[in-house]
Amino acid sequence: MKYYILASGSKGNSTVVVSHGRAILIDMGLSLSEFRKRLAKTPISEEEIEAVFYTHSHGDHLRPLKFFDDSKIFATQGTINRDTINHLDFYATYQVAGFSIMVLPTSHDARDSAGFVVDDGEKRLVYMTDTGYISEHNQTLMKDANFYILESNHNVRMLLKTNRPYDLIQRILGDEGHLSNEDSAMYASELLGSHTEEIVLAHLSEEANTPDEALGAYEKILRRQRIDVTNLHIQAASQWDVTVGGDDEN
Image (cartoon, rainbow, N blue to C red; front, side, top):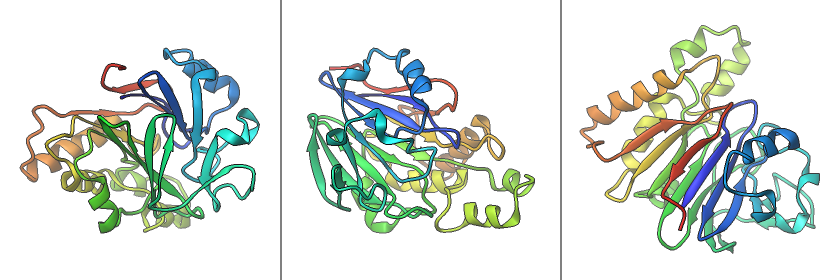
C-alpha cells in the first residue's frame, strides 16, 4: 500500500491510496485544476481512481461533486444527502476497489463526519483528521495499524496568540474542533503497535502550527511514554506539495 497526500490543511485536503494497481481518493477539497496539477506529480492517473470517500462536508474537504460520477462517490448521508451516491454507515465495512474500508465517526462541527480504516489485506492505513477527540471505542479499532494519517492541527500557545475571534479559538479547542499537537501525540502513543511503520501528521494550521512544532511535540511525548521510535517514520504533510508515504506499490 502506498499513499499520496496531495494536500493537507485548511486550504484543501485530498489523498490517493493505492494498492495492487488500484486507487481510491479520500476527500476532494481542491479545485479541479489544482487537483490535476498535484496528481500529475504521482504515477496515478485520474482515470485510475475507482472511488472517492468523503470525510465531511466542509469546503476544504468537499468541493462541487461534478468532478466524479455519483457511482464513484461514498459519503455519510449527513455529508452528502443525495440518493444517487453510495451512503456510508458508521462502523460498517465496505469492499471497494480491492480495499476493505471501515467507517469511524469523528467529533467535528459537521454532520456525520467520518474517518476511515483502509485495509488491502496486507497493510492497514488509518485516516483521521478534523476531530476534537478520539473515542475509546474508535481507538480499539485503530490500534496497531501500519500507517497513520492523524490530525496534528495546532500548537495551543500559538493558537491563543493568533488574531482569530475568541469564538473560533474556542471551537478549535473544543470537543468538535481539531486535535492539538500534544493531544494527537498522546493518542498516537496509545495506538502504535509492533506493526506500525509510519505516522503522517496532517491538517497542520499555517497560522498556529509549524512542522517543527508538530514533530517536536511527537518526539517529546513518545519519548516520555517510553515508546521506541527507532523504526518509526514520522513526517508532516504539506498544504502545498505532495507528501508520499507507505510501501512501494505492489
